[in-house]
Image (tube, rainbow, N blue to C red; front, side, top):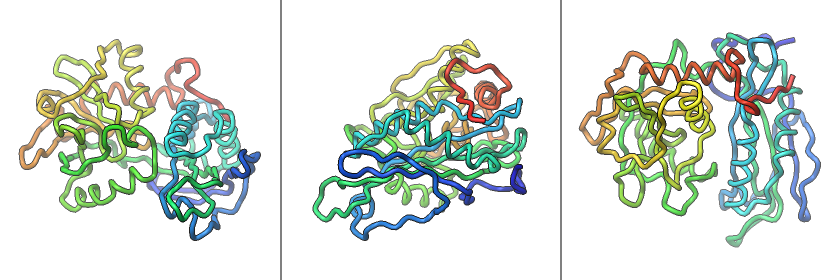
Length: 340
């Protein structure tokens, strides 16, 4: 029985559900995970996560498809990205099998919170791992906890995705050979000041450039860029300090194999952005957020797609990918994991 929730007006925020998953790493191995109803965490005041930000996380969604099934979208890629993040942060990685088992159990146990098909809402799933044992000297923790909770969330854009205005920021998101390619909590902590400043100035997001030369487009604080050229080619920035977005990788596949579009994954210079026809930010939460205007230190770059709606190719990409996620369009093999 679905919970009595106003799905269309739930918003995008934390909504407590009944169960969450927890497993502990002690004495060199991970315990068997289990479900708990307790959403609170008690840790040492000197825990590694509190002292040196030793933590990483993921984000994915569960959907009710057209035929009434509850599914997740490419969770194996979230598992691998979390494993990569763990290895970079000296956290003992979990296995893909453990990750998928946790996703299945959290979604099944909270099935009544998965929004119905057609509501525009989804069940957001947040896996994370953190250093739980005391750490005073600068070194990795010895004990860790892997947790996963979920929260129903409303449509990221109420009333449809309207193009946003972003700015080119002077802050750096990630350094070469740094941690920009993993989903570390510290990456998001350092972006908070820049995004708050952007919001205060009336912008929706920041466009970060590469830290080394400040000439190449990287990403925003929480999404990858996707561009469309005036002759219909899809272009995405390529860099070792960009987080490998699962949504962006999926859109690239859709562009090539469903829409027959030419795709380039390459370095994108800031100076060529003015020549693109469409621009979007892609990520789990919104799939694609269309960009209508970019402010480069007072010089406005106005995308031909305008400020009223998504550009035509961006819309095709959005409609096709969400159609795959919701079961309206046949998915590539292995993309959809049926849970219920």
